[in-house]
Amino acid sequence: MTKRQLGLSIYPDHSDFERDKQYLALGKKYGFTRIFMSMLEVTGSVTETKQKYQRIVDYANELGYETIIDVAPRIFDQLGISYSDLSFFNELGVAGIRLDQSFDGATEAMLSYNPYNLIIELNASNDVDYLNNILSYQANEPYIYGCHNFYPQKGTGLPYDYFIACSQRFKKLGIHTAAFVSSQIGKIGPWDINDGLPTLEMDRYLPIDVQAKHLFSTGLIDDVIIGNAYASEAELAALSQVNRYQLVLRVDFEGQINDIEKTIVTVPQHFRRGDINETVVRSTMPRVDYQTVDNLPHDNEQAFQRGDIVIGNDDFGVYKNELQIVLAPHQDQRKNRVGHISADELFLLDFIQPWTKFKLIENTDSDIY
Image (cartoon, rainbow, N blue to C red; front, side, top):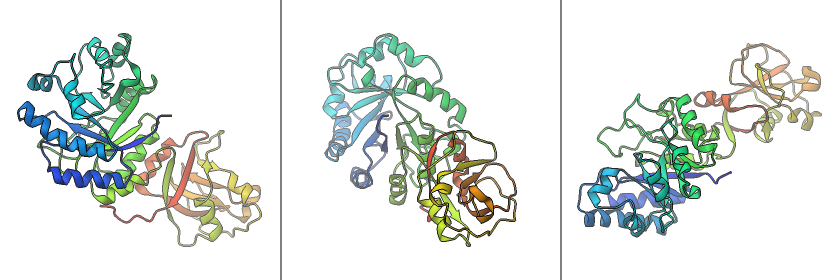
């Protein structure tokens, strides 16, 4: 599996250099390692543009970031850059360029053999045979990446099924991928409309860490980048705590939960049994590990609802202390209701498949914004 990264976005034509520096330093503190930098709205001369971008890229490189700069054909024309000579970007010190618009396949393939080993990142938000066309021209595959678009106008982000189809085209061929999440604080983007900058429309107003969990849980996205600037420190901190390699769900505990139940919820490495059912997600190892520990009945008379966490009580025989996450409403007095999956994360239950590994933690967040 490719190492997964967190990234920030910088807009030199719309932001303040000193504020950019502070933002990148804060990002480094929280483990961010990648930068998306937009060059779609250049207005100055070649010299002015190079100076403006050079100083922030140099600072980013000092901090150890990998910077990929977003360009379009008209920017090549505007800056007098030839597709056969990418020295302008090499001199900037960027790790690669993202092609916001496509060429003919042969051009992208040739670009991937540039002498500077610059990454050529493709627009991944198209469900067409674009990538295979490029690879058919014998592209230099290790230097081909894919990165989705973001969508500043509410209602225009990608629908989930389309996002999956687009992403699968890249991931099934082993291409490194990225997508965007949206800060609920950031106001800076490439254009004068900014209703947030996510890739997925359904994620637009979710807490930023839940957005990241969603993207990582698909198994199709390697890098998660905050589309708008500047995210708050609390948002950066929340993202830094996201497990990039397995799903971790927050649980709101019941008031009567006892010590053994809290242990069963938060300590084990949970996994869903492979022989699944439609009623509950079963994590069965706790019933083995804690089979000798008593667990008196409580909170066991109501109908359980989707997202409830239940644990077998002393009346459940061999199933005592088995942990289950409710998928379909049902009632069973041999189970204690000990908590509920956080409302914002309830939809992530769909990603717990046969043998999926997952963790559960106590929800201690109030409002990260």
